[in-house]
Length: 72
Ligand code: FES
Image (cartoon, rainbow, N blue to C red; front, side, top):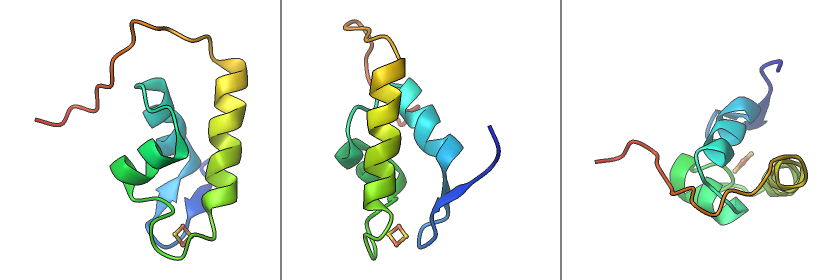
């Protein structure tokens, strides 16, 4: 996947968002809370919504998956 900056305000790339989704983030709000993407001007929120929506369509749902962002 080519590097693509989604949130200019907070320097969050598409790959970071997809990685968070793979780790268990499930909504745009999850992405905002973890990465701060979309929390400044909000202009990138439609694009984050789109990335989340596309991920949910393609990624099989694992009900056992727990949020794990390595935060301790
Ligand atoms: S571009 Fe993402 S909050 Fe401004």
